[in-house]
Image (cartoon, rainbow, N blue to C red; front, side):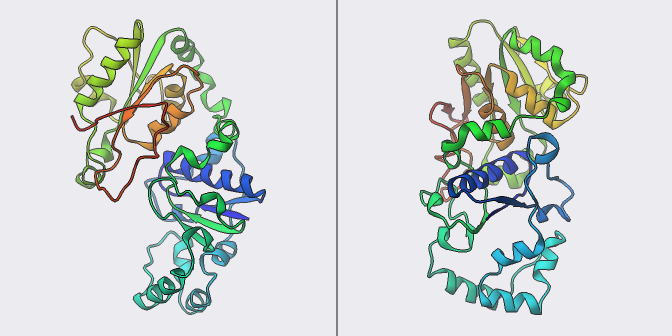
Length: 320
C-alpha cells in the first residue's frame, strides 16, 4: 500500500496526490491519503474529494503509525510520548534531539526511496522514485510533471472537476472557447509577504509585459482573462490599455475552484510561480496551447526547480 501525505493548498495537494497515484499504479497496490495535517490548520482545507473525481480512502492513525514509526526507536518513543497523537490532531510536535539523532543514524543506512517513510530528498525529480518499495509512506511536495508523466492520461481524467461545481459557468466558458483567450494569473495576498519573497522572489510587471509580447507576436486578436486573489488591485495597477480584457471578479466566479476551472478553459495561459496556476495550465486540454511561466520558482540555489515546468512551456525571467 502507498500512503501519501497531503498538505498545503490545492496546487500542492494535486502534486502530492498525482505522485502517490502514479506510484500506486506503477506498483499495482492501493493508495490512501494522510490528511492529518489539516486537523488544526485553518488557512487551508483538503479540497480534492469535493472538487474532483477522487474518493481515495483516508489512512487511519494506526496505518500511518505503521509507516511513520516503523523503526523500533520510533515505536518505543511513540508509546512513551504522544507525538503521533499530536500530529493527528494537527498540533505542532518536534521530535526530541536524542530521538532525531538515533533515527538519522539508522536512516543513513538506506537511500530515501528504500525507507519505509520516503521523504522527498530534493525539489527536482528523484530518478529513484519508481524504484521505491510498494509498501511505503510518501512525504514531500513532488513538484514535477515527471513523477506522473507515464500516467498523464489517467491523472488528467482524475483531475476533471465535478460538473455540478462549474455548471453555472457555461455561458462564460462558451465565450472563452470562441476567442483566442489567454488567462493571466496574478498571485497577491501571501505572495506579497516578506517570507514568501525571500523564498520565491517576485513575478514582476516586466515578466508579464514580456509574456504578453510573446503572446501577441504569435496569437491573433488575443482576449485576456485576468485572475487574481486580489482582482481589485489588478484592475487598478495592471496596465492593459488598448487590449480586450475581462476581469474575473465575484460577479463571475465565487471560488478558487471556479477560477481554476475557467483558467483551464482559456486557449493559452500566463502563470506566476504558483502551483495553483501551474495545474490550471497543465490541465488545459488545448493541444496547441501556449503556456508562459517564470524561469525561476525559488531563489535559493538549494531549491533546484529545473523539473517543475514541462519542456513544451515557455519559461522567461520573472525578476525583470
